[in-house]
Amino acid sequence: MKATEMRPGMAVIMDGKLAVCVQSVHVTPGNLRAFVQAKIRVVADGTTLERRLRATEDIEGAYLDRRDMEYLYSDKSGHVLMDSVTYDQITVSDVIFAEGIKYFKPNTSLVALVHEEKVVAIELPKVVELTVTETTPQPKGATATNQLKEAVMETGLKTRVPPFIEVGDVLRISTEDGSYLARAKDK
Image (cartoon, rainbow, N blue to C red; front, side, top):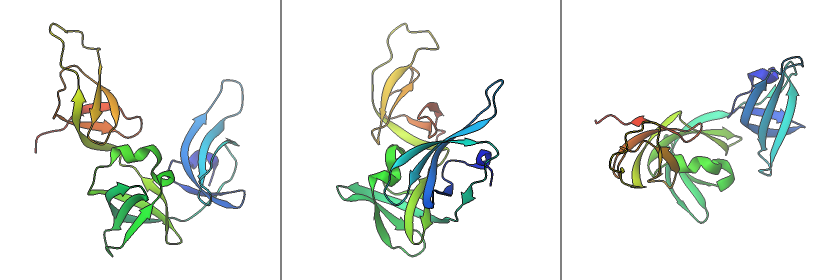
């Protein structure tokens, strides 16, 4: 595959090692050749590397098995996942989840990317619904629509929200940048 086809969560072989793309940005500067600025995590040791690749450069892709799993809980040994088909439980390290753990509450379904029976990455959904646990009250007379305030979600994620949001509200949060999208619809 070409470097421009690389997306976060894809597995690639770089320098003979299995790596997972964490971030990929296609840059086309005005009078220069296009390139891809990629951040990859080497599976073997967990190190993160930044690579600048030519847009037309060929990259060797690797096959990852996508498995439905459920995030159960976290403890000092890691994060415990359960396979939705076999009910086997496995513990994965903080390196696999990274900052993504702030989008998961216990008993949340997710997709794990597995290579040779080892979880190498977690696929984040585009949007998650989380409950507000802390925020400041709306100031009286605040009518400016572009004012945002800090809010802490049930998983510890901090984000900026409009002033009318209160503790207990369920919000839709983007996992790309952790930003507030909307209130969740009542079910």
